[in-house]
Each structure stands twice: as structure tokens, then as C-alpha cells.
Image (cartoon, rainbow, N blue to C red; front, side, top):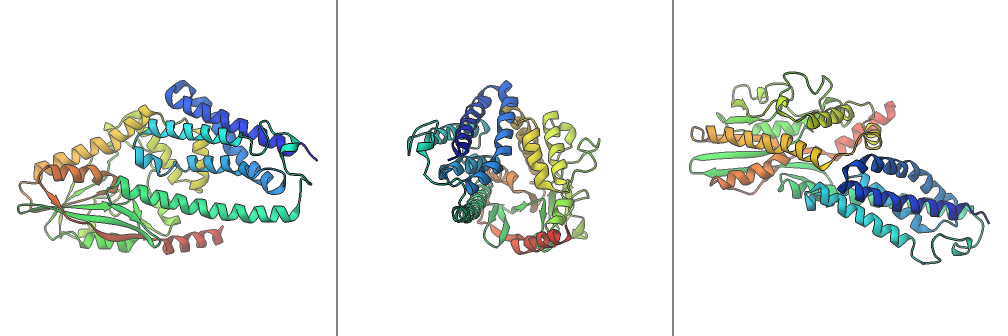
Length: 387
């Protein structure tokens, strides 16, 4: 019998355990981030080989698949853990501890010991066609189950972190619209997303009352710090969708004078350089011919996002913009009876709570279908045929 199966298992478990230690340490000791990127890159590069080996080599134990699944979960954002903790450091700590716990489980004597010896693995030849076919089928089912679990986790996370302004089901994605009333004034908090179906944006525009003041979202870039390529048009086209109405234009221009528009957002000149760099990286992914490949390259080659970077980004992209929007609301609320705030759903979680703190009572949301999965599937299928 070949010694290859046990060597593969032993080496991969050691790599997985070392990566877990480094990832946990890198959360707490910033200079170790570069080492963490190296070990995680090795894990991502070796994972396909490990899965192929598990299918082909019958003597490899089934638990060889567990660390690959775990790394896939981490690479996919560890959902729903970030939505539960809402803290990068604690998410990283819990993820690192969970990885070490799994590494310990992999070396437990069931059967044998670690490192494995030939006697610890099942008897028989290394390659058996029937065994390989069965494992390939199992791997396919695990992949489908993993994707389904990730989709559910992301759907739950979106609903949780947006206070219900975004929800996802088997048909597509919806955004919520809450009317918040105080005396004779109504503030309409309308969940928005950067890409969606044209019919969805039509529905959102139709809900804007005549004569209302629309406080438009849209960060300006007077000095071109994000570059000319930043935008959602390319990825929207690939998915059979359209960019958010007003992107790059006076938001609400399609209202044809039925309502008034005031931009209530900031310029990127107010952003920290760390935020600008991250946004440029995101823009490069959005504008790439293959966004998935661009994302994976970014994960393996870019510097890890530190707690300091995340604080700067959250401060610039959410906190400061929310504060500016609320200052505009405070400025106009005494003069207006209908104010419409069609902002990104992540903003409306805190904005909605701040509006309620100002004495407004917000009703239950009514939802508008912004994306249907059938549209996305059709567009992706057409794109695959063209390629």
C-alpha cells in the first residue's frame, strides 16, 4: 500500500493547525498579518488538490474534507458570525478558536493516532473506481448543501444587520419601506441597493409622494480619488440588472419634477486614506471581467483588513454619512411634511433608530421586490453561452 494517503493527511492537518494558530495570533498581533495571508494562501491553493486526492485515494479518511469546508466558510465571510457579533476582532478570535478546535478533532484517535500510520487507514488499494464515484457524488451533495447553508446564513445576516430593510427568500431580494410619523410630518425610510431590476426602481419611485423632499444618497468624488472605473454598471449588466437610479447623476432626476431632490451625502475628500484604498480595491473587483477571480486574487494577495482599517471604513462609509444625513433631516424637518430617505439598507438600521429617538413612530415595513433570482439565472446562463 502507498504511503501517500497518510502523508497527505498528516501534512494537511499540520498546515490547517498552523494556519489556525497564525490566524488567531494575527487578530491580536498586527505584524503577523502578513504571515496569516501566507498560510491562508497556502490553504486556498492546496484545498482543490486535497479534495481531488480524497476522491481518488480511497484510503484517505472522510474527515479530510472538514478543514476544506471550514476554510471555504471562512473565505465566504464566516456568515452569520459577523452579523451576530458585529465586531471584527471577536469574529476573528472565534473563527481562529473554532479552527483550532477542529484541528484538535482531526487528530483525535478515531481511529488511530496522529501522525497517522498505514495501519490507521482502511485496508485495500489506494485507487478504487467505485469508491471514487461514490465520493464524487457525496462531494457534489456537500457542495450543494454548503452553498444552501451559506445562502441562508447571508439572508439571515442581511435581515438582522439591516433591521429588516433587506430580506431574501427563494424568489429574490426585497427592500423595506417604513413610514415614520410625528404630528404632521412623515419620514419615509426606503431601503435601497446599488443594483436591481428596473421595475423595482420604478416601484420605489412610484412611492415618493408628490411634492416630497427626497434626501438623496450618493457620495461625490470631486477630485477623482476613486478613479474613473468605480461603479456598479458592469456587474449589474452581468447579472441582468441595472445600477441604482441616479448613480453618477442627480438622484431623483427621473421624478420629472414631481418631487424635489437634495443631495444629503458627503464627498470622498472626507474619507481616510485606508477607506479610499479599500474602495478602490472594491472598484477593481466590480469592474473586472471575472469578479469572482478578482475577489479570490484579492483575498490571497491583498493585505488583510485590520481592526483599525475597519474602524476607519465604518466611520467613513456609515457613521459619518449617517450623521450628516441626520443633520440634514434636522435642518429640514420643521419645514417639510413628506421627507423621503432612499438610502442603503445598512444605513437605515441606525438612521431609523435615530429617527425614532426624535419622537417619530415607524410602522411595519412594506416590501418592494428589487431582484428576482430567475432574472439573474437567465443572465448568467446567457453569459456562460457567450463565453
